[in-house]
Length: 83
Image 1 (cartoon, rainbow, N blue to C red):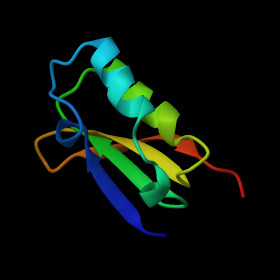
Image 2 (cartoon, one colour):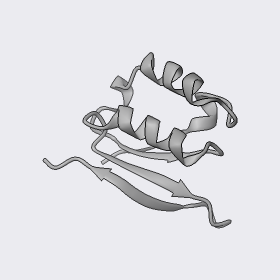
Image 3 (spheres, rainbow, N blue to C red):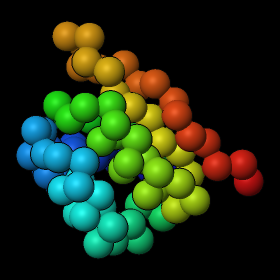
Image 4 (tube, rainbow, N blue to C red):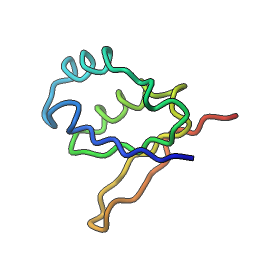
């Protein structure tokens, strides 16, 4: 299974408002993440990670949040599509 690391800082600035994040994500093409294991990282608040993860549900095969521990990050599973 291919793992794709998605940096939320590449989609919107870390201090974006909820409305900005929701607007950008509503227009976001999730097709490139179909059946891929996606790991989300970035300096955005948890709510922004949840909005992005929610948009990927049903498209990605699995979603993790990457928690930074100073050692490159630790994946925390949040979604795994049941085959």
